Image (cartoon, rainbow, N blue to C red; front, top):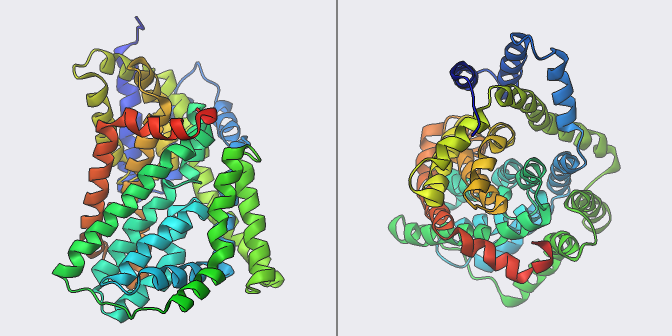
Length: 438
């Protein structure tokens, strides 16, 4: 049985508490992680100060993490090339005739966009700037327009390919492809659950109903959107077949979006590429710097043996696997209210993963539950980035935005609880369909 000193556990908890306080008072998460890790390691004579910078560098020195800026670049190229607009027109042609059609289209286009960009924030920005004003103009209230957009954007972190899945796979040393395939069914069910809420609200709030689109016009819209619609098929198909790795799929997405934007739609200009690359570097640096500082803080927490303490706590706790997974959901739901998914996983996955393994929980199903939970954190105040982006587009307060997103958040929470209760079933489905990946 592992032995730890009481003061080590206390110091580790204090470090986590200081990070929470700094974030709560408005300090950027990456700086909060960096300051605590540097001062904490500086106070320990046994660890040289250079460990902070070594851990930060080593945390980013990964071929897998190269997918992060590449997926962000792919999303920026899609938005610049007006590929997002084509997807919206296509989805609206398919479901716009129903009451609440634009809301359905919002969810549907987020599901397709998720299969291309791998980023929920990119989904919110790209889809939201078009659909939120369109929905408000069509007669939807601001809360609904923002709530549907923000909630459906969370699918970008769940439906493959996904940046958060790439990061988790690197931390837990599991197959990225297997994690991608595991997220497919839950992602689709989350989208269908949101559509069910739209169906209920369309009657209650009398959502607008679009005009029916002729079949030939639907076929024309699908034909125009075909290059964009093929993107997820190419990426997922390439990963499943072993043609390229998930990281290479991000590079393929960039090249494909660039070719489609320049030669097919002719909306991307070569002169705009430097600006697109600069925007990509700015967005990527936010996540990657937080990831680097989280690695440094992880070294500090491992010195205090928090992972050993947590493992012993869960091993001795009554309730077994189900209680453990419920505690994980509650914990990461809380963490997601003030911290981005990437640093949250860097900090806490290494701590709870040994406990999950000792309880017989697959690292893949644990990762899926954590990723879905942190995705829901993107629409919870005060840090919910998707909620902040969508509310800024509409110009409403974060409180009103959350009220609009709440019904869709609750429907997603129901799917998450089903994922926890029947975790073995969710893993069995992709393992049966793609046995070579598991």
